[in-house]
Length: 221
Image (tube, rainbow, N blue to C red; front, side, top):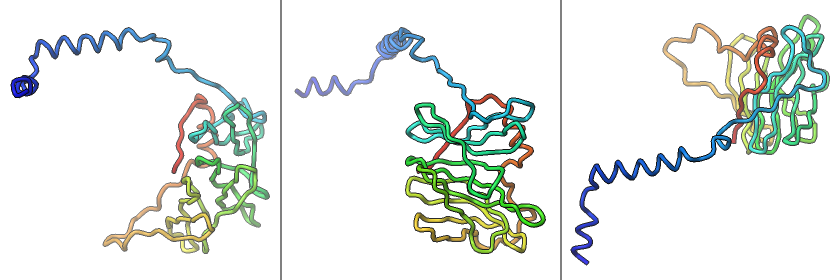
């Protein structure tokens, strides 16, 4: 037993290692190339426009293959959509809001994003959460003059940013019960000179809609 144990502890010779790697690489290269080739599925929501700066912008996909994003219609208005794994597409806008962005989806199919609420002078951004059955919950921290919702995890926690009445940006976290927590870093020695950049503007989003359809995603747990 001692002699055999001593042999097992001896260094592997370069000649043996080279031969072993050659066998492994040969087996890998012998695998059918068709198994490594990617496949693509192209899609558009039914009301997506096909003119300049129109079309579909997928932004996220969950573990079940459900895709969410937005599209620009023939009137250059933005709307959200969700595509089920079987290919069925549902278009949506939160009630009383327009120009909808869908930015994240979690495992259960909850979608979050932001949309525009008309005001007497213009509009302000409001966050939303869309439940899998289609019910909407508005997301707006106290004192917000504009809310971007960026993400949601599998526990239903929603994260984003908002700007207050003084023009100061803050991060926030909303839990599944609807309670908000403001997220600000410790007071810096030198205040930042510029606010964080929000997601693409309507004009940029329309430009993004002209890119090839298959795109990212993310989603969060």
